[in-house]
Length: 217
Image 1: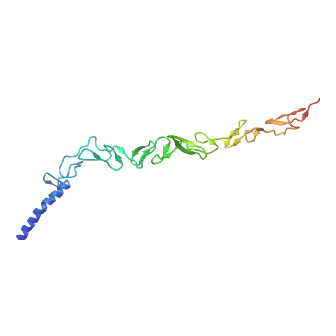
Image 2 (image 1 turned 180 degrees about the vertical axis):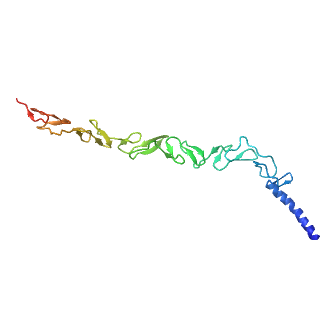
Image 3 (image 1 turned 180 degrees about the horizontal axis):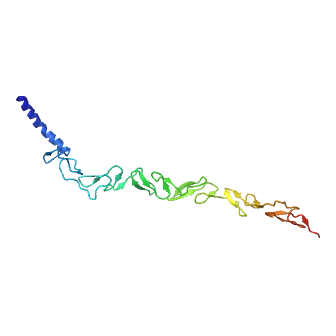
């Protein structure tokens, strides 16, 4: 009998500790052991009404007892309504969801940290941003919005086209660095000069296609 009484006294001593443990875990309210806590309750200890957040916490946020939201990882704001990106989206980019930025025109990359010129920069040009304006910085000898136009300082005459820095593509009948020299398939004689494709300018007293005819005095 003594051993049984001792066991009873041990149980009576342990019962308050058990009830305290159940209360701390939110599993005992008002003396009802084993009653689960209300869904959404955010009170960390013991009894209390369910927490209420209005508007509701978004993106899986947890409503705390004081009416504030504890946001899930990747979200912030009073109601966890804003996604967060780390590093933050640069150059005016917007964080759409955790780690995903929507970039402003002219920028790209995961965090909008790279300058992006529409169509790209050609012929060794570099895409840069100057005072928020994105443009191509062209290599020497090139110009245009995408550095697509070559520069010929000497100019290309007679409908020639500048195809590379300082280099002209000449139409038929013209040659030279600036397409300024005419070509006569039949050379001009007696000091005559080719002034246009297959056209000679003759010196007196010569005439004709090749300046071969001598006028009679």
